[in-house]
Image 1: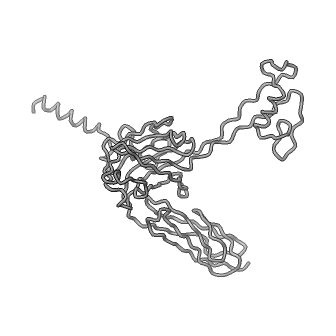
Image 2: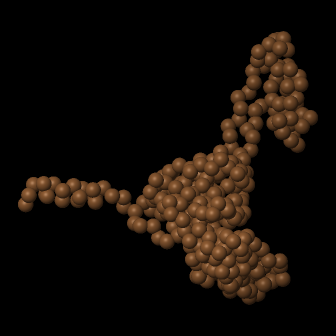
Length: 340
């Protein structure tokens, strides 16, 4: 074989081995664990936010995530599509969602500030000395209202020694992001937006998949004629950070499924503990527990309950789509409560 031809074959083989391992993106996929540079939609800062590749927290083995810093509803990140996605008339299809899988980053409390140096004999304006007014302000900032420095609310304060300084107290960590603001940008320059609460993640994981039904957005008649999605902006109700594992426009026709488990037999003086595994697809749901013993219903992923008297009971969990697009489903669990 000609040496020039053989060299070209080897070069092609080496190039093929060096190609990225990611498959072609599925229709509607914007991001699915690639690097930002490989994704169909490029994540970038929007306003005062930031977006960087991260392997610190991953949703799927062998993939990574986007670490997004959000500083409020108007400062976050934006995913810009390389090619627009045709949405048609999004009002006509109640099975299509903007689906995002994310994990909120829980902020740890900041370290307390170092205590200011006090000079017992120093003049009021000397560097390092503390005036009485400043000392009172520091005590109030630390949550000590009308007490001597070092005291805690509801407890006696420490003696007010000459030159004493209030013990530094770290401010509480900032509250986590509770709600996300999504702005869908279209090729005609218009946009629609939606604010959605972040649901609690399933037990045993920090990752949660939440969906925004496209049919529920406030589309104008002109937008809905032939909507072409070009970008998605994500902001939040406060400053915080999120790991984003996937973002896509998805069709979801699957029904809600639920499986309840827990204690089956115990004494009346003991509580019963119950939990459930559910599959709601892209839907956001509510959990409603009913012990069927005359007590009020309760909400949440888990349920702990003491029954008022011995007997047989049917513990029920009803899972409902908050958007009303899927039929609610109820799972039940039989319980025998014995006398002590």
